[in-house]
Length: 391
Image (cartoon, rainbow, N blue to C red; front, side, top):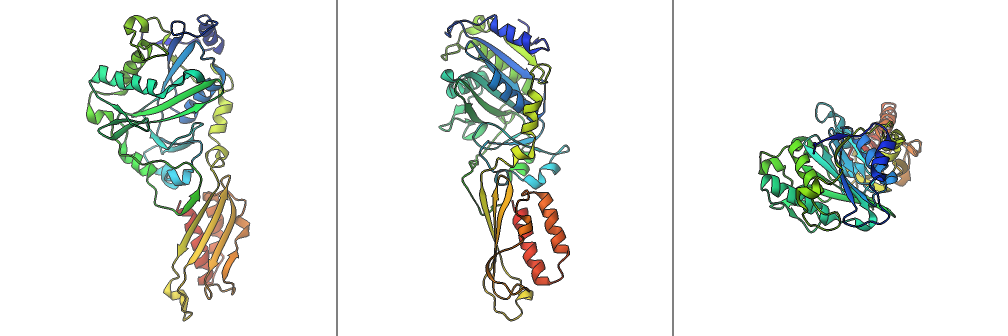
């Protein structure tokens, strides 16, 4: 059996292949498996392909494993806060090509991808969703191909001696489900840490927070592990396992599956894919879907501004951000610091309300600061700016 079979560049051909092998009822013997390998390295395109398949495919008698890789990117969960999870302002300057930010449709924590990752998505009907089955397939393939022992943690991550080598997340719909995970094969760990390293910020939110773990690459355990061979190993292991129970059917069962398929994620193959990608690449999706949060920061008043007032309190700034936009700004200004004479809790800089919590808004603050000549007022404005640059 050839390792790769190319799909015809039309969706109808794909559907016909599936329908020709479908049955009225779903049993272990009647379900066929395919391994799709995406030919894109663009995170937004691959996430769009994943979502397209979730929306449009009937997996009742056709289970699919999708294998894919991305150029450098940080992928946050659907319910996460990018300012908490990623070094947002520095991402464009990490690696030669920069690091993109993406929000996926599934829950869970934040992950870093580059071409040292192998990403895997297991598609099944909702009733056959089984994370441990999928993780066992990966674990068995690593042992069979590389004699490497990988454990499944209580949180359903893959680990080697308590070092995490794969994270996991899922999306469950009414009839369809997928479970996806990423294997660290030879990831650039310097770029990974730079992209995810964040100073502590006093943010109050209900957004899902990532749990930090010690990580390692598979190639650190066994230098023979590399992406192309790993794709083959996982793909064949997937096809030789019975679809509804973890029973090895050997190569006889594997050769009776639909095999490996190179897929080209374009509108020509998957009509409407570009529309999904356009949503995933938008600011409204990356940042606008962030759960509401408050950020508070305190600033010690410089001695040069006290001028005998005996100010012992800090200036405090609180911003409320909703749908990725500034909803409210509050200042606590100690008596004597404002040239305008106000003190206590006051609402100011109302012109920023409704603006995106972004660099464009920082530009507006820069203009305000440049127009101030009073040193005290300049300090207050600089404090506002620091609140935004601290996340």
